[in-house]
Length: 251
Image 1 (cartoon, rainbow, N blue to C red):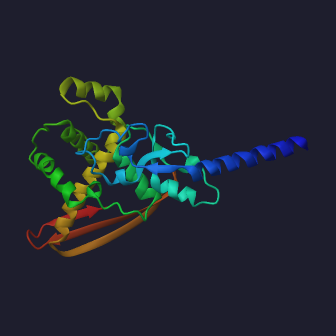
Image 2 (image 1 turned 180 degrees about the horizontal axis):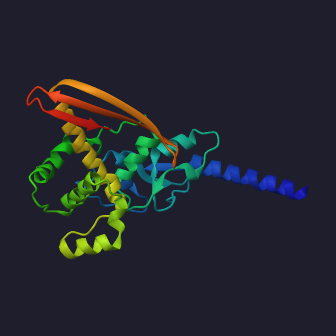
């Protein structure tokens, strides 16, 4: 009986300690890292993503940094308002994680948060992609690592290949031997690069739809037996008033 009492006391003390820790945490912008004077030096050209509005440092009540990862401000606010807050439910990543992964997290876990920035397909983002798209349409070689990553992403999407292809040693050796650019990681391709490709395709489809004269909509739905995830597909076949050519789009 005494062991049960001691166990209950331990659980209770652990619960209160975790609750007090979460309640006492404070989120600060990534440029205001504690112990760095006026803040860390940043490259202003790279500070354009909406993710910097909610990914930053966590500071404890004593003023010390809570780990070296960057944490989600939205998760912190949610947990601090929760009756049973938990530190493990606050999304955090290492410093090398790309902003595309952070935006995916916000879109999945915080759907009410406005992600209408250039990473989500804004006009400014399309202007940045335009030179690369022009090269892609005219079969011109890439001239930078940024363009090479997106060319590789298009190849993977067109051939329905897994992004893990980029991490295979054989593929990496062939690229290293015949190309001046290193192979990006599968994680980079499936996040930031895929987001850019999606934005480009979406803009092209919207442009075609503006000249639509007639269309047929087909729908389908199924459930992934492995992950038990539901899917809903829409296929659109249409003709345009300009060329009277048939187009087909699916999502």
